[in-house]
Length: 256
Image 1 (tube, rainbow, N blue to C red):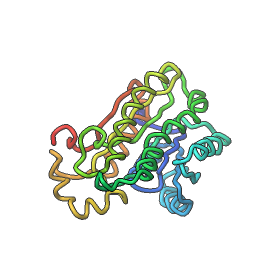
Image 2 (image 1 turned 90 degrees about the vertical axis):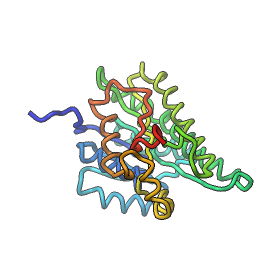
Image 3 (image 1 turned 180 degrees about the vertical axis):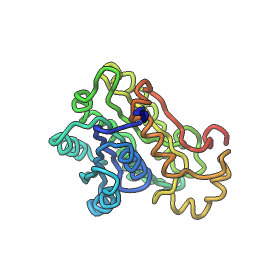
Image 4 (image 1 turned 120 degrees about the vertical axis):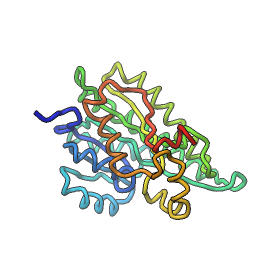
């Protein structure tokens, strides 16, 4: 009999920032494991493109939302739960900004912190009653926050607000794990290293070989690497894991 340890059949997942990059990788992996997936992204056209790409893998739809604004977090939660309560929330939507310290704009700092840190808290809070309704004994609902290895180490680039937001998100993950565990919800984070994405495209084009060489494995991440970590945390295999921050970066954060 095939193992059901990583089977997500019958589960519904919301993946924010799911139209591209790491969010799209995670959405693809959850669909392949049998979940029904709702993706969200700021741009409706990007959502439509992603749904067309993912539809061959399973049941997927999109709800566009600008999650840098609290009212949009609430609207997304309301729109989703009108149809059904999710079992899994993946807080992946994020932004980055790089500039010298003398020139770093206050508006950019606020934009990155709002989307990378405030939004996961607001959306988790808005969806908490729905997540709790899906929890059963031995099978909690799941929140997966997407952090970064730049929240575990000092980054090489001048991405002050990004690295600060991801370090804070890692700690928020631990705080929420303690708070929500007794309510039947696990909260974990993955901390990706370099993966092919729009956010990383220019950096990888200019320095891809150097970045790959930082990893003991000698490469950057592949889509299945990211999907596998998310499926583990979302499935029965990860049901006794909470408060963890799992680096998915080829050993870069631990060894470089």
